[in-house]
Amino acid sequence: MLIGNYLREKRRALGKSQEEVAEKAGIERTRLSNIENNKGDIRWFTLYKLIHDGLGMTLEEFFKEDKELKEMYFEITPSKVKESSRQYFTKQFVSIPVVEPVNAGQTVILPNQIIDWKAFESQFIKDLVSPLACQILGDSMYPIIQDGDLILIDRNRYKRMKPVFKKLYLINIPESSEERGIMVRRVKISERFIFLIPENRRGHEEIILERRKFRDLLKIILGEVVWIGRELK
Image 1 (cartoon, helix red, strand yellow):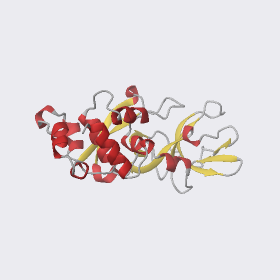
Image 2 (cartoon, rainbow, N blue to C red; image 1 turned 180 degrees about the horizontal axis):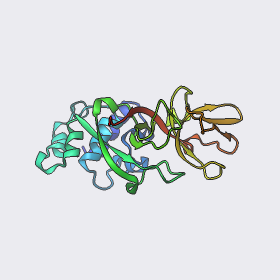
Image 3 (cartoon, rainbow, N blue to C red; image 1 turned 45 degrees about the horizontal axis):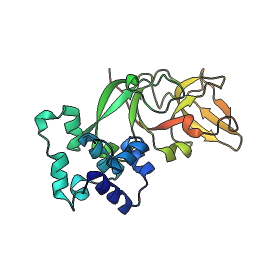
């Protein structure tokens, strides 16, 4: 059986949609559709992300009915695999991109926005969707987040569509607003307004957006802050 057909059967058996699997694996849905229809080549690293992140399965679980197919795609000489990819492959650590979120209006991280990589234990981030990290500048969320802290973001669509006030979110202020930029804020939503609230009220005011102007929360809420780290000096 071709790998695309095998992948489609496994996905359907789990009751997962293409959109769900593609989002968790961090690839475009059209790319997954092409893979399932055996259009073009598929790299082993992409396939591993689809199995591990998209379907939530181990390699042994996925290839239980077809061991030969596993050998065809995953019998790789370790010396030929880059260190970061080998760490991902063995499920010990995963390299997460550290980005400088400067392009307002974009929820897709472009290659030229990646400034570094940080390794996180795979088990720690296994439930996160397309995670990314970035450094925070300023004191608007002090004392929870301090200037220079590194934050880890979960880009799960459901969390972005259903923000919880006690959580912190990476926010993109739209160009059509009087305020502009990317920042971390608490989010409170009423029938008419979206309130973006800083933790530190000294010199920082809450931003109020009219919901009728900004109906698509995914363009405003880029992700939920799930981890904060800082270097001790």
